[in-house]
Length: 256
Image 1 (tube, rainbow, N blue to C red):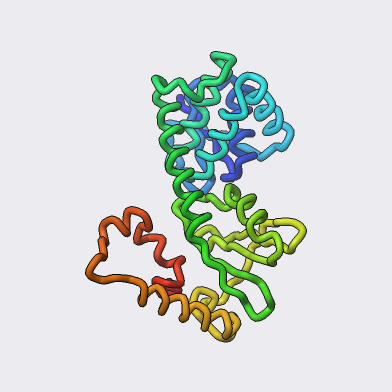
Image 2: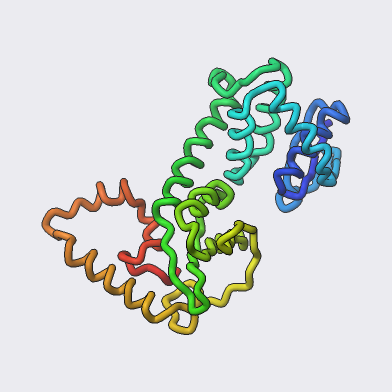
């Protein structure tokens, strides 16, 4: 009978679940988050309590038997939040402990190939977020940006923005996952906010009027330099996919 390991959705929780798969010597296993669990008469249920020590022991074992490349791949693919991602990560970890070496390039294994393909998608999303995020200055002096990426890439873009905007107080908020990164000129921390609806629009009650005027000037410049007769919409959307237009001031799609 299959055993379902139910965890809280955190990365530490997933590592704890995989540790307990080995600890309990479970053979037929399915790992799922609390939010996606559906009870079945044909399965045994095992609830996983996130345990930092167990998570650290598994992580240490991964690094000991494989390479940082493998650990990085596991973490990045976890951030994809794709259905059944836990199973692919479990199988990947099992391959590491079976072979006692890195399996990152063993593309003959279906689970390795799947994680490699997902990692490419994660990389593209990270790159686009770094390129397309636009800040707007609020009246209290914070440069604010709201995003809704396909994958949970905020942890991956933190370093980029901390280095690039080291002299500004900023906040990048993922409205689809309801958390953000806040930088206070010294450190970056994770925050959860109750955002008013007007934060997603060009509201003078939140943003500086000078900032809104700058956006209008930028949009006018963009329109004036665009040569309609030479427009190649298909090529344009290849470089700047339509789903990213909502981040760009020049597209005038701030309300979404």
